[in-house]
Length: 119
Image (cartoon, rainbow, N blue to C red):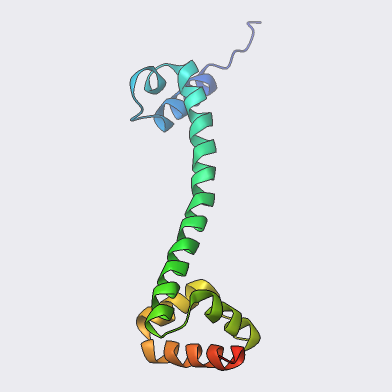
């Protein structure tokens, strides 16, 4: 009885890896051994990128809020402190969306934060 070898499964695995690295330059996109390493690095960087995107968006929301607060005569740090004291439980994403889409509503939030701080 002949020994069983991977055959089609091995070929499919190689094709899957090489298809994943399609578009990579030089050997990493053509040679299987280098392609496997490229796939590992690619997945690591993808995970880092997903974490990075969250950080970048938070920075964007804070920048937007800071600009909106400055237009209304209050600093961002005072605004956030006032929101906490006034029990306004909106996150920075929602606050920045309100500042863009509903300026009058954001004015009301800023006034509530100002009165909670007392300045």
